[in-house]
Amino acid sequence: MLKVVRLINSSWLIGSVVFGGLDVKKYKGNLVKRPIIPRTESPDGLTRFWIYLDGITVNQPDGTIVPVYETDPQAKGQPMVLDSGSPLSALPAGIYTELVAAFPNKRQVHTEFGTLYEVTCPGPGDGGSLDFTFGDKIINVPYYDFVWHSRGASNICVLGAYATGRLVPYL
Image 1 (cartoon, rainbow, N blue to C red):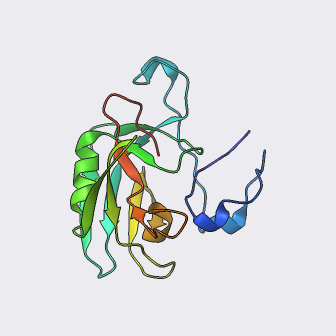
Image 2 (image 1 turned 45 degrees about the horizontal axis):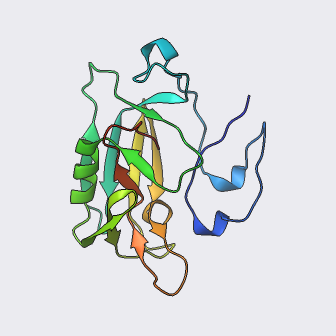
């Protein structure tokens, strides 16, 4: 079984790919199994690593928790593809709009991905996280790891997501 999960961290730009194993230095906590949505039930009818996302909250550095998305308890959740090869997450427009609203100090930037948002560049220990819920498991991604840090002298940071439009949503 091949297991690959994307975690954004600029210090991991140089490294190795582990096939059939896990690098336990790249995460904390216990792993859990999540069912893959079958091709026949997937939004695009294709075989991909589709899973259901049940919630997103923003845990701000001051301790304020901002709900971004929560699945109705009777629903299956938001289908998302797990993509380990992209520096940005592609979110459905409604979820993306709520995520952007949780970052008060942002500035619109127009790129080939569409509209992105420049945010304050967090330091590695500054606090704050995006918390993704899958079933009863919550994955805490520190701001520092979710924000896309530019290279070079510009020192620009961009919120690590964009609105998908009609494309496949992925994390």
